[in-house]
Length: 418
Ligand code: SF4
Image (cartoon, rainbow, N blue to C red):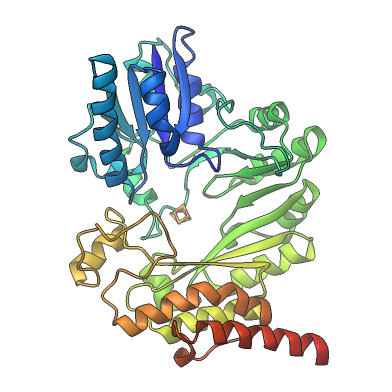
């Protein structure tokens, strides 16, 4: 059987689809290809798959729906029959009611459901029984650093952040352990086999269990040693851990602050995290030579522009290597997204939610405030880089080019005059 898996873009590896491809091809009679939405019409008509599976994130449902309508028409015109359409990944899992157009909806992790549907006879008992992802649809691009994605664990032990889908996932799939960790030897063997130039761990929180982390770092240094990057909570980072990270060639870490305003951290379910823990984590990582990307969210419900400038000020103080910032999106199905609806902070019908974290805020803020947020998001990292804390009134679209100039002059002056 031929199965076509369609993801929005192939600019980066899609681990979900790659894992499914391995599961599908466990039965040697099955063939599977992973394509982007741009390639999918041509391949869908000419390769003539019997099944078309769509991997859909929130914000993309309409795009995929329109595509499937067109594909079914063209497919029927060419072959006088229709392929079966399957939808899966985050959006169909949380909002299946939007997918009457699909023949089959697979909620949650799809490996076992797909294996059953295709009668491969395989039972995936635990996380280590799932085969390594099939990467052949994502060949190395000449002249580009060969960065490959890996995942050593699924789930999140914290599970409390109200803007994240993890808590809802846990409610929907209570039988799944909150955190499932692969055998570290298998993770290292996979990376050794793939042999990329740089490894990126997609885990929500990498290396949560100290013994696992120590064993992993030791074996990774010995057997692989290529540079890697991962995500950790600030609370996870100690001096000992930072040393292990550095020794195993972890060159950069993403850690989430979200907001330096305690009231807002309480609102989003990160109240237990103290600013001192963020400072300590960055200090330990920097002392060991590991770079830090600090993740922030501006435009949270009830946040004033002064609150968000305070978060910027904190970033300037702690000096991450990159200050990543998004504008809050009230994703339906998350605790905070649903609270936004209840409290009237968001009055839309979710049609204005795109798959970008960098668009204009969709919350019920005054237009002037939305413009300030939009400008602040664009200039945030540059301000951190140059130690420039703008005034609220500087954050207008008209003023943005002047602001960039001022920020850069500030940097120039510092370099020239100290
Ligand atoms: S935001 Fe991160 S730490 Fe919080 S629940 Fe989600 S995955 Fe876990």
